[in-house]
Amino acid sequence: MPRSIPIGAFALAILFSSPIVWSQEETRTTDADQKRVALTIYNNDLALIKDQRRVALKKGHNMLAFMDVSANIQPETALLRNLSQPQGFSIIEQNYEFDLLTAQTLIQKHVGHEVGVIYRHPTTGEETIEQATLLAANQGVVLRFGDRIETGISPSRLVYQDIPQDLRERPSLILQLHTAMAGKQELELSYLTSGLSWKADYVAKLNQTEDRFDLNGWVTLINRSGTSYQDAQLQLVAGSVHRVTPVADYAKRQAREALALAEAPPIQEEALLDYHLYSLERTTTIKNNQTKQVALLSTQDVTVHKHYELRSHTPHLYYGHSQASSLLKPPVMVYLHFDNTEKTGLGLPLPAGVIRVYKQDSKGNTQFVGEDRINHVAKNDSARLKLGQAFDITGEKRRTKYRKLDSDSFEASFEILLRNAKKESVLVKVAEFIPGDWHILTESHPHQRETANTALWQLPVPAEGQVTLTVSFQTRI
Image 1 (tube, one colour):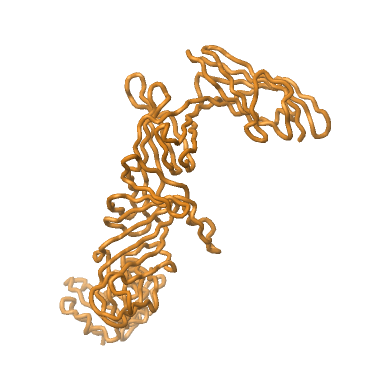
Image 2: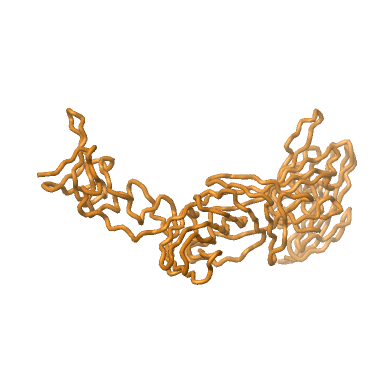
């Protein structure tokens, strides 16, 4: 006859005659034991964690569950050190347990073991628990009672004696270790993890004469590592750190370009091998699934130069495929150029990131005027920002001549007309792509060879006026 016990009198430790065999006794340490946590974060999905805790250990063999580690820990990189008693301390074995406790894993771990099944009396509402063996848990549970087998019972009606020790509420590193002394000891776990990254963002406020801007930089921290870091000491590494790519994982984990610091910065910079290391002077808390911004630099009156540029890349005009009268209207783009020197008001290693530029209108309202991404800009290097297309400066281009000389060479001519509707004169750089091994035959303005296949002209365009560039060249493809 099946045995049912009123739920109020149900004693789990007595009811179950064949409990799960649990692992040996272990010591657990959580983030509540943390004395210090330090993060070194790289740009692209990589961080080094140093988690220091005070843990009570017994003399000899210990099983230590180091909990509240990153869910994306690379366990092969884990290193546990005993800072207080390094002598006689050794690691025998370590395992990363990521079989997390859920309703489904709890059921799966009890297959072949006894569980309690809650029944509610249809009229009295009294609940009783009957003992059964869980035979299967795929596509519904299968239970063996003393006199029958039942299916169709909701998993929510099952009760369990305990949680199997190999099921973890959160990811844990399990270590078998040996220590020569008993008592509380300072342990530091270091490991690499993905899920943490940083990037730089900048805000530039352009003055009315468009020859200076105020520049503010921010570090944007992104934490998707599966855990939070309370009062962490934060360092950022910039530079391309080489890492071995796993065979089955082709696109992960690199760290890139550099960082910046201000004259009185919240972040201090130093050299680390051929990289830049930046340390936040105060601790900060980075919560899981959080984006946090930390001030990086603030500097005023940086000298900038605005210029206009028309870049023409139309090789089809030079192969006889277009009519000589074909008219093109390549855009004239607006650029800001600055030198990263102390003389201009900078002189700092700037990390790769997006610079967003703002300017006040005639009523004093701040307006967004464009943005561009910069690569790492070293000290004494230069950078330029493409803000957008000029409205009052336009260009027209047409091919005026084409003559084929032989199977792989030809002569061609083109003209570019620039119009300026502004009330002041401007300087426009015109860059023309010319294929092959080329040389200029005639030109209305002198050129410079910018690259092997690009000629560059600098054309002054008068206020409310226009200028025409005419060029003839010969090339061998």
